[in-house]
Amino acid sequence: MSSTLWHGRFAGGPSEALQALNDSLPFDRRMFREDIAGSRAHVRMLCDVGLLTDIERDTVVAALDTVEQEIESETFEFAINDEDIHTAVERRVTELEPAGAKMHTGRSRNDQVATDVRLWTRGAIDEVVELIVRIQRTLLASAEAAGDAYLPGYTHLQHAQPVALSHHLLAHGWALARDVDRLTDARRRVDVSALGAGALAGSSLPLDPEKTAEYLGFAGVFENSLDGVSDRDFGAETLFALALLGVHLSRIGEELILWASSEFAFVELDDGFSTGSSMMPQKKNPDIAELARGKAGRLVGHLTGFLTTLKGLPLTYNKDMQEDKEPLFDAVDTVRLTLLALDGMISTIRFRTDRMAEVASSPYAAATDLAEWLVASGMPFRQAHAVVGEIVRKALAGGGSLSDLVAADDQLGPEAAALLEPGISVTRRTTRGGGSPAAVVDQLIRFRARLDG
Ligand code: ARG
Image (cartoon, rainbow, N blue to C red; front, side, top):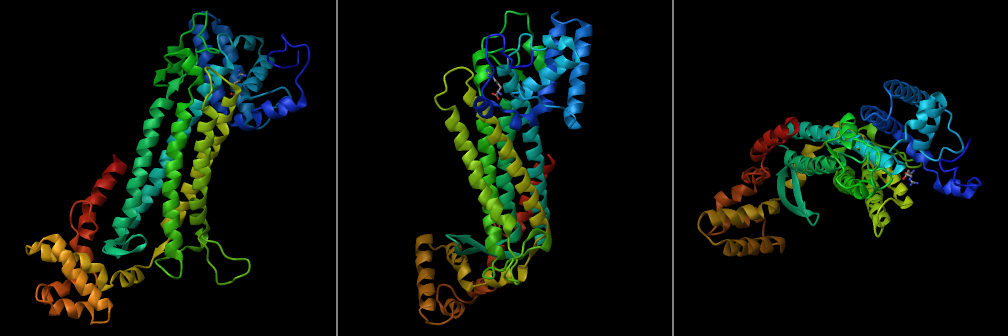
């Protein structure tokens, strides 16, 4: 009896074309640990409810251990009819131990695969969160090391107001903190066992789904067997959180690309985290940052592909759902590689703070400070904006330096002109969450508390 799991009902074997399309083993074998853990829990539960003897339980669990070692050490021999990892494990367990034929009692691959993917995703989220925290710590360390350094803050990629470098770095850190929140929140809905839902409708056998869930360390159990086998929301949510994380990393990437250009020259990349050109000897390229930018497309694609697969699927399990694994696996692999490389890139980067200060010191960057100075002495903001705007226009039209014009102005004068000195403007925005080095001191404390908390 070599053959498929349904050989009893079928006179002939599967065609090659069917197998090539249908088999998920090439990609789902990476869930072998989760599949074996699920089977161990199921077998223990079957024994608890009297469907297996203690001896049968122990021998099947021992066979599962052997299979795990075989797959780990790559001595496991997959067979042509091993359609997926579930089939392969069960086939081998039964070869090793006849009681293995009882392992699938009260279970379907439908509740089995849903449980495996949930277990896998739960572990993957934990791993990704750790890597996000790592890059957040790097941003924190860079922010702390940045001291009073400042650079132009931008809107529309035009100089807006100077901000502390630490402020800028932490902005990315906070976005990543929300990614951690989102993944942690999605994890709550991932952390639910589907085992015991059977093919779709539960079982006539006295199964105990709560026990299985407990053995697997799940926080919850499905409430409805139909939903239990067909719910893939958890995958969609996880993919959304990963896609948005990818979008955040792409923004960091884009800034590093700009900053590394000769035009900005705000950073110098470490040799270990940049590439050269095969033709142009002078080149040093920010490939990691470009890939961080580029990979976001792939992550967004996985999310939209996944949602499209789910759309319109009638209850309950449909083979379309086999398409849930590759996007999840690839999304996790992609963010893992990107986070690690970007972390290395940022932790070795040299910030050219002299250059940043030089670029940020244009007196025009302090125009808002002049208007706010007038407001502090009682002028309505709209009027102050117009007064300063007129002086800026005059200076730009060649009517004198901004600083001379401000000093000579009745309403402004020398005290206001002093605000235009390099490095003064940045110190003035001391409100909570603001861009001055002094305001960032509080922010650093809150950010560190979040990471440590
Ligand atoms: N390989 C399948 C998957 O990944 C396992 C579930 C198969 N279920 C079935 N009814 N054919 O979805």
